[in-house]
Amino acid sequence: MANGGEDFSQFDISTEEIEKLVAEVVRYVIFKTHQNSGCPIKREELVHLVTKNYSQRNLPALVINAAREKLSSVFGYELRELQRSRPASANLGRPSQNTLMMHCPGVADPKSYILASQLPPELYKKYVEDVNAAHLTGFTFVIVSIVHLAGGKIPEGNFLV
Image (cartoon, rainbow, N blue to C red):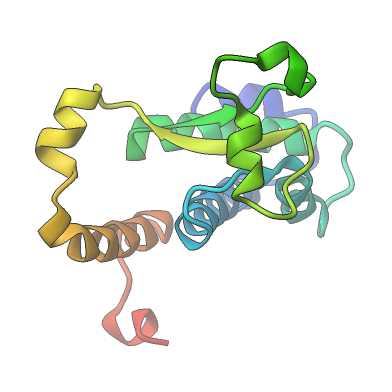
């Protein structure tokens, strides 16, 4: 977020508060993706996270972009914005995001996001997808994410609370 500081200089918000907002958006995206089996996350949900304490107009877009950079550089995920879907007749013969939307109730907003791994598919299958250890990998990812978003360390007593 070193280059993002210039963008945030227009707001009267400390660097620590900005980092907290970015961490909150990153945490929300990771947990929401896991909780809803990869269903899209509405942009309005992310905007609400940012604007619940701040009313600056352009702040949500800058925080979401900073969260996108952090997800990419730290976690190896790309936060992709879903494109507006065309009518079903225009998409004949090819899979569309409408299929994804049918399996994720309540997601009709055209401005939604999904997380996608940046690993090439063959590496992902070889090193990440292990059916026998999927539960352990998921749990480990959640723990490492929480520790990273908390600044790299959490006292054991605080973690269990």
